[in-house]
Length: 229
Image (tube, rainbow, N blue to C red; front, side, top):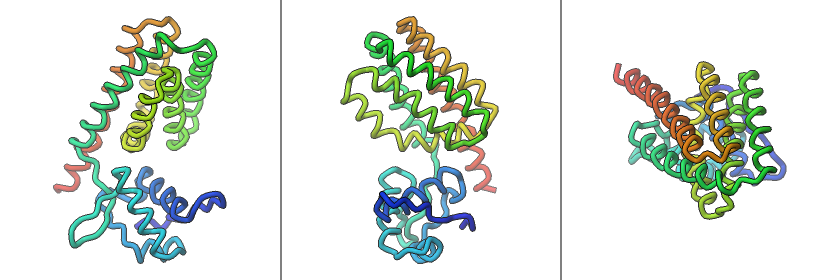
């Protein structure tokens, strides 16, 4: 277990949520590795809390697919599998393409301006090397598109999928070589929406999700090869 694990206190959140956010970030950053055991006593001592908020936080991690409970072993950080990634990104591809098609018809000039601003903010964030910030700006870019559909049911579906997507998004963003690709894809998506060109916007979104799938697949295969050695 990493020695850097410390509780990020927030006076406005219940303790279980503070613990959850701390563990979640450690998993997404790779400080807690896939397959690493999440032992209640050890985590409670490390974070200076009782076992109850640890137990509740682990349940929340399980709901997000970031932890699993193994028979006779207890909870551990969930491994990223090709099947999980393919399932999640298959749904994401369909919903993102649907969202951008609807947005071509419904996006307002104000929303379009916001999208262009967020697109530039994302590009600027890539210069910081802060993976968490870059991932959050990528989420924000997509959120503007989702909201511009004016379809709350679609937004709810996408939000429900968000946390499962986030882990793969972070893995992709960890590699700075992907930043120019992401910037170009965001530019193409925004240009398609600006021109209200459904075909161009949908194709750009399709490539955006597919490129992420290819890159993350490579990461998972390397992980599997390392474990088998």
